[in-house]
Every structure is written in structure tokens, then in C-alpha cells.
Length: 151
Image 1 (cartoon, helix red, strand yellow):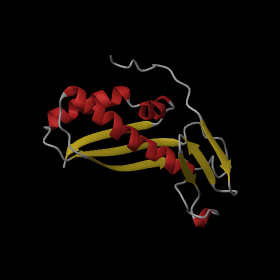
Image 2: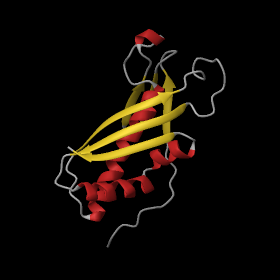
Image 3: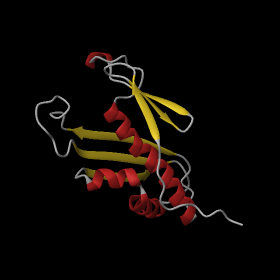
Image 4: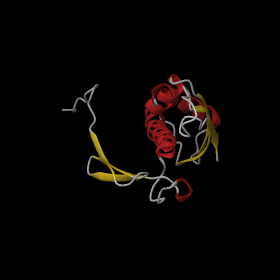
């Protein structure tokens, strides 16, 4: 008998500030460190909050992309990612409120599997429909461009 997954869940995280620029975040049985680089007053023990947010898009694209590829029967192999983010830092610099701080994101996805470019385009279209982190950015006003190509 197959297990029916819940469609709506409440996720729980906890955290604590371990310094003015560093936080420890508990998720499941894991601890993640978020920190600022030394030049911004941190100790560089982890990605900054904004870097962690960008990294989430790469991770989500990988997970959802692989799920979509499997559902479509497409062998994408392993994925590699290169990302550029245009970040309006006036808000974090306390200069003024910025409604859309991440103005644009360009994500290049490269697949090393035997899938054709046409198949990768199908996987990309499905991934764009279902990746919640991509939806988060797009619906907040960020211009997100994700390009899939063969290695």
C-alpha cells in the first residue's frame, strides 16, 4: 500500500544569534551556520543570509529538476550550476527600504547526461512550474532567467 503524502504541512525551524553577524539554524537534526564575511564584521563560518537564499534556488532547481526528469523519463545525468544575482543593497545598508532587493537572477544549468536539448527544454519547463524557490523569487518581482544546456 502506497503512503499518501500530505499536501500541506507546517515546517518548523529554530535558531539563535551566536553573535551580531552569526546565527545557528536548526532544521530537522541539522545545524546550519549563517554568517557574514570578515569584511562585513562576521567570522565567515557560513554563507550570509542573502547567499543562503540564492543557494536555495540552486538546491531547489536540482531537486525539482531531477524529479521532473524522472517523471518525464529523461536521463539528465548530473546537474551543474552557475548563478549571477543583481542585488540592490540599499536596504541592507539601511539607506532606504527596497521593495525588490534581488532585481534579477541568471541561473545556468548544465546537464551531463545523454538527454537531448529538446528533452532538457521539457525538463526546464516542468521545473519552472514546480520549483517553490523560483516561484518565491518570481512572485516577489525578481526577473529570473534559468537556462538549461548540455555539458
